[in-house]
Length: 265
Image 1: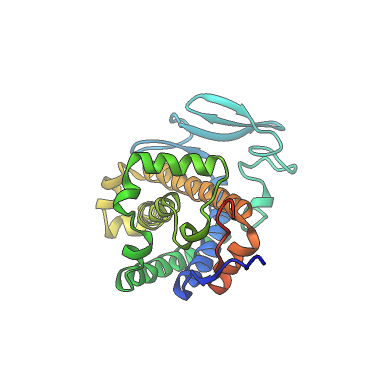
Image 2 (image 1 turned 45 degrees about the vertical axis):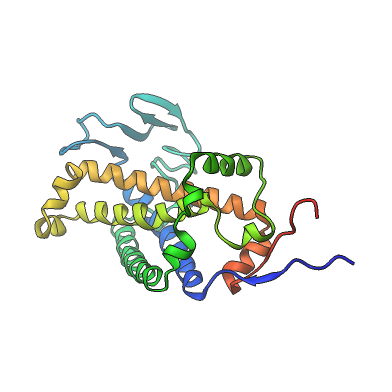
């Protein structure tokens, strides 16, 4: 008689709380950030950036034809970007907060949840250090750092072969790299570049402008970090669906996770 796979307690409460607060904050910041971007849908490198300067990215329209221009290469985006839902804006109302054009409203949403992200991220970082969650669960082990091991993990994910049995008790190397990248790269950089775009904070911390090579450059990096968050969310949700949404959601809601059966058993 076949036995049910083992049910283990895999995701601790602080991790679960941070996950959901972080998810809410990032979704609101992405959507409000798109509304803010609509005010000037062009990105530049360097210390200066205005309509007559050369932009490396432009989302715009010519009449009812939307387009995305990257380094001079133009892609038609009518119905998605530049012109969608009868609105001649870079990002359509369906994906922005607020849905109607309001830069002041978008800034209020954006700044409030930026503080939420900073506070929750700081508390979670302290938790990872003092609970040893960072060293025990997120840090890559010596064997996981080898290129052969990483390449094998990449191939398994490409074939949709997710860890099973005992291997599913812990995060796999690609998960660890993604989570570490969010915690130690994306979140700090998106916060610092956001601060760089604030005239008040520029006056208090002028070294921020120098660090990122000018406010236009900081805005470009901020946008790329937001794009990184969006890509992370898409890949993360796809992995949840493919690995078994019920089991994965139970883990991040209750902490309990049922180990998938070993292949061939």
